[in-house]
Length: 387
Image (cartoon, rainbow, N blue to C red; front, side):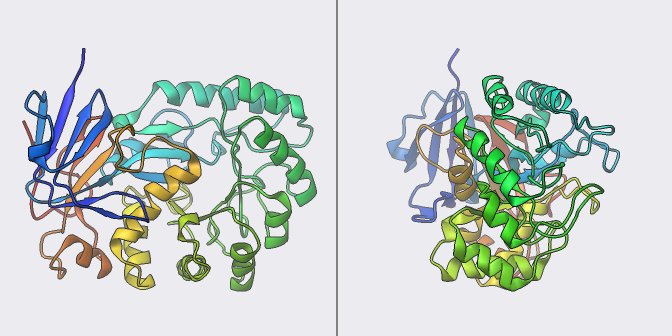
C-alpha cells in the first residue's frame, strides 16, 4: 500500500551537493520512502499525504552518513560493552553507517574460511536488522595472508561489497595489499586502508608509501585513528592520488583541518568524506559527525552548508549510495534541525560556524519518522511537528 509524506514550511533546505548546497524550496514530497518532488508547497501534489510534517521554518538536510564505524553484533559494541549505540547515533542525525571491519568481535577468526563466514554473517544480519532505522552497510572482512582471487569472487557473489581497513589484519605490505585490493575492485568490493599509527593490538603503522602502493578506494582516517602521519605525508597523499580523503572524529584534529585545507587548496573538496572511527578506545560518540562538521566549519573557515556536504552528498557519491542528496529518486533520509537554544549564532549556519551544534527535532529514514526531539543534541529553538 502506497504511503505519502509531505514536509512543509522548511526555512532552509540543504541539498548535500557541493555544486548547489542550498535549494530554493520550502517543501518536499515523499512516496513510498523515495523523494518524489522538491519545490514550493503550492506546486507539490501533497493534498493526500498520509503524514504531514510541519518543519516550522527550520532546516532540513539529508541524513548524515558515518563513513567509518566498527559494528559487531546487533546494537551492542564489545569494545565498550555498550548497548543501543547505533540508535543513539540516529539521535545525532546519522541515518547510514559504513563498516570499516567488524574487527572488535572477541575471538575474531583470522583464517580465510572464518573471516569470510564472519563477513557474510555481518552482511546478512545488518541487512535485516536496522537499529533506530539506521542503514548499516556491514560485512567488511580485513585482509589476511593466504587469500586468493577466488575468495573475493565468492565474497562478492554472497553480497559482500566492502573490505575492512587494510592493515588491521595480517596483510600490511603495500605490494601484497595492492594485489588483493585489485581483486576486490574487480568484483565490485570497495576498499579502505588504515592510515597512521596502530589503533588496536595487531594493527601497525601504515605510512604514505604503503597507502599509495596499496591504492585502496578510501584513505581511511587520513587524520589518524588515533595517531596521524606527519603533515607532509598527509599532503603527499592528497596530492599524489585521487582517492577519497576520509576525516574522522576519533583522530588528530590538527591533521583533520590540514587534510581538509589541502583538499580545498587542490580544488578537490568532493573527495572529503567524514566518519567517526567508532566505537573505539575513545568510546561511542553519537554526535561525532555533527561535532566534526562544526569543527571543520568553525576552525577551518568553511561555510557550514559546505561542511554538511562532506557528511552527506560527498560520502554518498564516493560510497555509491542512493542517499545523502536531496534529489527525486533518492531515498528519503532527512534530519530536521534548528539552531540550539541560546547559541550566539543568529541562524543555524552561523551557529555551526561559531562552533556550536544544532538541535535536532526530527529524524526521518525511508520516509518514516524515526525520532522527534533528539535525546542527545541541545534542544532546538523551534521544533518540527508531525501529524
